Length: 167
Ligand SMILES: CC(C)(COP(=O)(O)OP(=O)(O)OC[C@H]1O[C@@H](n2cnc3c(N)ncnc32)[C@H](O)[C@@H]1OP(=O)(O)O)[C@@H](O)C(=O)NCCC(=O)NCCS
Image (cartoon, rainbow, N blue to C red; front, top):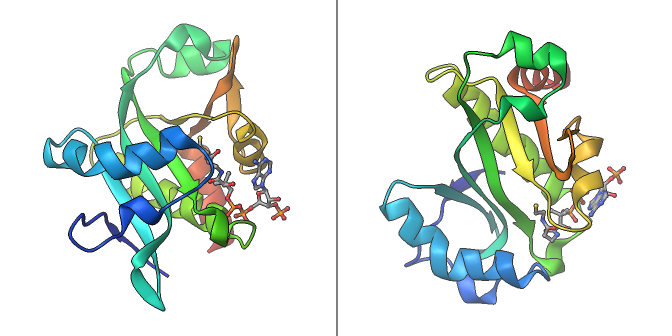
């Protein structure tokens, strides 16, 4: 399996339905425009039998770091850092849910961010979990920021270690 950049001429964005309007609308209306403007990048996993159909997608960008929301030890370690990688969106179409595609997409997104961090170093990957998805991220080692239960992070060091383990 491989993710490819969203291609509005090829992919049937309006057929995608993950059950969350904001995430469907982002894919349909915003993702391509935002990529054209170099604000975010969206990658999709195509259905191999029918490559215009999108199994799932994620959108990546960078975000500012609020160090005060991190545990003390990490605040100290990363006191000079200003940005983190952001998984701005991640969703799987309901037709393909519960078959491991969400996990596969999350790992693929983390691999891309790890690779980017080797060039433009940043210490954390951040995600804003939509209602009900927090535990999905916690399963993969993300932890909530102080006082922000639905905003989670994982360190690049932990991403590197867990991807190495799974190789
Ligand atoms: C959350 C989502 C991406 C999961 O995708 P999926 O393909 O159904 O998930 P997977 O089949 O890869 O599940 C992987 C593991 O995570 C678990 N999991 C999946 N969704 C979960 C959730 N919402 N909460 C807790 N655990 C979850 C699965 O049980 C599975 O665990 P297992 O390996 O122990 O069986 C998908 O349900 C989705 O797109 N939901 C709507 C959009 C959304 O909330 N996206 C997150 C945006 S921040």
